[in-house]
Length: 605
Image (cartoon, rainbow, N blue to C red):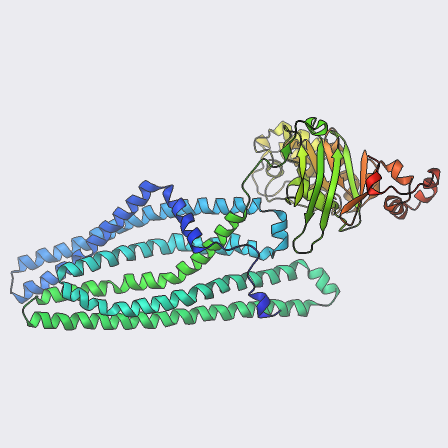
């Protein structure tokens, strides 16, 4: 893959600098008292830090004027007290700041993860999965490292610089002006670094995400790659993206090294200017040798803070890019809502049913989807959606579930109904005990409720594991019994029982469980459907045949609808598919008179 593709902007947005500053300000405003306390402590620590240079200058003057040893000892004690006091207060300030930063980071992580969970499925599916993954891992780590380690260093450096500059000016304005000779080197070096590093470090994060995406694709598709003998091609793709990432990281090192040269030059010029100016002023009798010493020490004291502040821009730039990517996720996520419209004037929805009115949705990347779909599922009944892969049935299910906002049209549920429960074909087992997995949808579920749920879906094997510990919690992080794919899906259906939704959507829930588990899972699904409004997406028509209503999809639209018996009685996709899946049905279908297939406008309701 070319570099042009590797460095293309990710689908997920990156927040602007102004938006990032607004987000930081919002986090700071939640802790006004602690922010003020941190500022006072750092100011006090920095003020105590200049006590030692001042005392050392007085010692030089005392020695030059043959002052008594008692006087010199007093200044020595003062220098030691200032150093100790500065260290103690600085330690206190860092501890307070660290606690504040960690609280802010915890809130940021929660907001980002919550926002990521609210992202529309289409947004995640259309982009590279590694982009979101890198934001939730690498970018969070970069911000956490900057906040936990860099922030205290940079804040102490900023206060030390400010206090030292004020002290140097108060000591002698001419010496302070001489120190300004270093400013052009710092300013020019920093501007060049900021201008280039922001671009470089943004590219580093993007290329790292591209590299991760290539690795994920190779790992997830290893069976297909092996079958087609394409392992070398995948390895070359990973290597190419990794090399591009390394090249950009090396460029980042070059940018930083150029900054080092500017800083070293500024330190040399500034210190030489202060010493030269001090020599002239002392020769003219305007200042003492001790004052020159204090000025030189104050300026030398800036070497560390200035270096920390400028070198810290490296980490700050990385954190700023990471923070911009995280805020981009927060801004992209829709606000939480109760989803679905409640329509008390619709007879079906008033009693807990489901109604889809003129719904249209198309995927932005492919243009495929569904168009002008109408569906009426009375309360307590099941509608089965069938059709070839890509016909639109799963897309409609995701629109109803709220994963995809419809381009036009609307989905209506009862005003008292909770959100539809969506159960996909993918198998999900979360680390933890069986009770932990069940309580994901009902954190306060009692042991009796969990036992009832697993029994309802035929998962009697889980009862012993649930009752092994008081409250249904196992002391280990692993399930007490081995979980195969069938048992994992049974637990997912048991979770649906605990959630107790009025509407349940089953999107090919038996597709990944294997033949030897299918009967048990289908029995669990039948139990879940009982008494609920259900939408069943199925490739196996034997499963769809039990539904009160069957809707056949093709090219994003319903082409047939009716019961199993009425659809078998007419020519059309359903009877062709049934005959193909059930060879013995060729004899049974002759009982029904052949009728023309109804058009979409004349479908059986």
